Amino acid sequence: MLRFIFLLLISTICNSSFAQFNAVIQWEKNIQSPQSDTIYYNLNKKLTWADFKGKPSTSGPAAAITESGFGFKMSVSSFNRKTDLLITVFCYFNKEKSWVRPGMDDDYALEHEQHHFDITYINAVLFIQKLKKAQLNRGNFNVLVNKIHDECFTAMDKMQDDYDGQTSNGRIKAMQKTWNKKVNQQLASLTTD
Image (cartoon, rainbow, N blue to C red; front, side, top):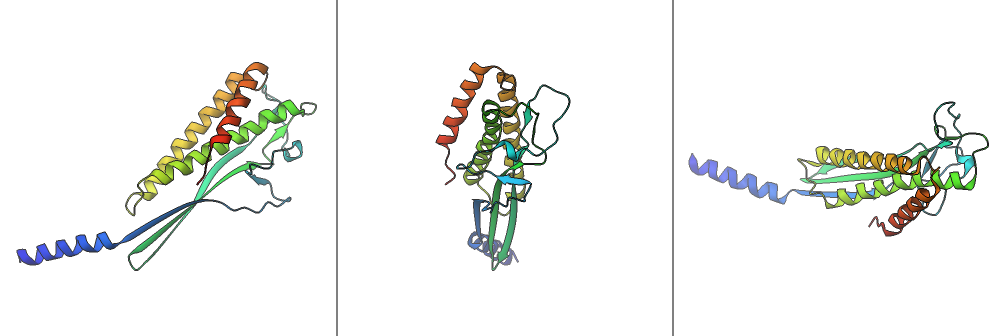
């Protein structure tokens, strides 16, 4: 009996070591539609005021609001002891929830709003980088992917708050210039490979 249990244990260990787990993390390949209320981040395309289609708020100090975020889709397939995990990450701007007050739509304010979208993208890339470094496996991927997403989303929210707080929503021009340089340097240094 003891010999049978030992053989069963060895068999289980051998079988689990031969099980394969493959994780692929990639960007969503979105095709932009002019009719869509969503713009997916593209390093080669900047926002324009025409993208801000929401109704302006009547309260608060903001001249404009950029509604952006990042998320992911996850799919898992298993066959013959092989598990494939595909995580597709996207970074978006919501046209209908983003707005500008009349008379406030100048180039200076647009650059401030573009950097809000850039900050979102920076943190989406950091999310991808952390996922690629994580030791994902069959037993932990669901919890770990969500944990990393939450950490990166919290970091993004803090960076957005720091950006608006330190620039006073873009009104402190010297600080806005500092943030412009900081954001542009971070964008230039990012890699998604």
